[in-house]
Image 1 (cartoon, helix red, strand yellow):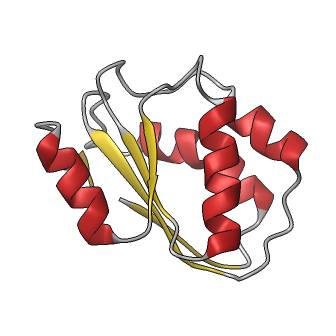
Image 2 (cartoon, one colour):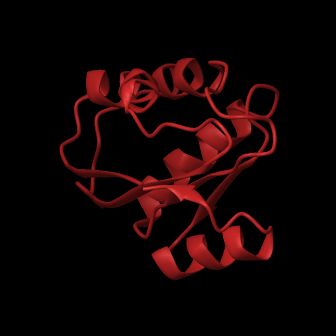
Length: 116
């Protein structure tokens, strides 16, 4: 699981794949939870930035899921925008409001193993 908090810099978001791939326990078959619960109410990120990030090829396998936890409406909307932009590169993205929803979604898909 990856958690972003406060005013997360764009470079940190863009570098997430490299950071995860470099972790010694990385397994592309894991599913990923990105917790944006602690992100500041207003983030400085453009639609073009979201499109660029979302359209990159995923480092996870085609059967893995990425679940983004975004309880704040503004962050939820940005995450949904990313989900739409990623339809062709990472179709297994879900955006939810809580950790409980994220874990339930992965359990329902039989993907209880997640990076974290």
